[in-house]
Length: 293
Length: 323
Figure (cartoon, rainbow over the protein chains, first blue to last red):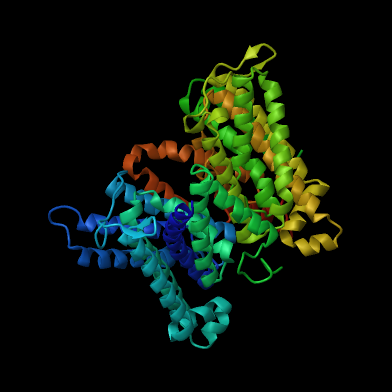
């Protein structure tokens, strides 16, 4: 029993690490521009699918070239989303921006469907598929890649926002856009950096986890929803809360799939999320008020 | 007369279309779906457009109504009308129970909570296979009959759906112009201010949430009797999003806008079929472009300049909105 639980915990942390990266992307965009980006999951899909497409076939690029190119492409998509969909709709209401990003996600899914069809694809494991034994639980090397990669990225993002000039400039924009502009911050550029960074995190999540979970043109939908849930669970707008929320959601799902019912695992995740919202509307690590009046 | 003139225009349109085109696929088949969507959108618009409470899980209530009707009639041999009433009662109770905690939330948190609710409902439909037939759905749902007049043709369903839609629109229009309708709009403006004016905001929000759910449940029951087959796919997250889009596309806080949005969004995929593989992509692009360039909605967005011109001609002073 204990071995089983250990196994569920390890799986949960791996899945949770992916959720954490997506949730972190949600928080960054929300903090920078007050937009809930429902196309966040599409970044994960685009990162993974384009890497697969570029490295596939006889004349495919080597992974060392295909992966960075896929990341760059996803960052490009993120910046274009900001430039051509979010920026022109300045001052739109919450509902309107939600529908714009949903439209963007449908559009991106449509492009992926057109380019790559409905098949399910996988990336090769980064360093072999020899299982590692921890007690009676097993772990693939790729699980370590996911956990380690996510941890490094989270630390990197934390450092970026707290110790670099640009990171602080983005935070300034999220506090007060006009004031930020007045002290000479290029708000437009900061928005593009925020969307680019968020897309980068999505692409990385996609590349890291696709060897284990596979991907398809519509893989981003559920990931996006899970990432949003994780961000809310941790307290929306709190990046490190989002990461904690992601890992927690992964653990809840994995444990409830193993111990209760695999069919209801997503439902259990959402029920816990609802309970958290009902009793602590600002999320587990959020500030005291959910929304100022 | 003047207040409801739009309604009479709509009613005339609904009645005349099948008389002029009795065997047209777009009127009697797609048209019935458009009418169904309009019922749902008008209900949701009361909640979203007027009370300003977003719901990304409205398909759940549609689904509860549809499945209650389907299960009671196929598995227990109930009379369809009794099943519809039970469905409405059940949906209303569920909506009432969840409304208190859910409507305390605002903005993105409310969006997340309603979204979660919709997904939980959908998972239950898929997983509780013994009752719901699981992912394969439920078939052989009997059709309705009105005083011995069986609804067994597309055209007959058109009349019933059209009458229900007009009824819903009529009720919605009257609610909006009543005391509780003004309370809803006050609530949308500022909850604190509304409370200061003596409006019981909790009761008002609960009321409109339950009302929207009841409307969805009725639509769900009609849907399941009309289709005679239902599966969880029809009640997914995507359908909730589609409903929200209908409301926003037409223009929030406009009942006719909701009807318009429902009609547009029902016909759009039909028209995009000719683009085959490009369908999904074009649908997403249209959604995005509409919201970027006409965020107040197509119907309201096109209506405002027109109406302003009209009022300017009638009297030089008035620039007051008509409704």
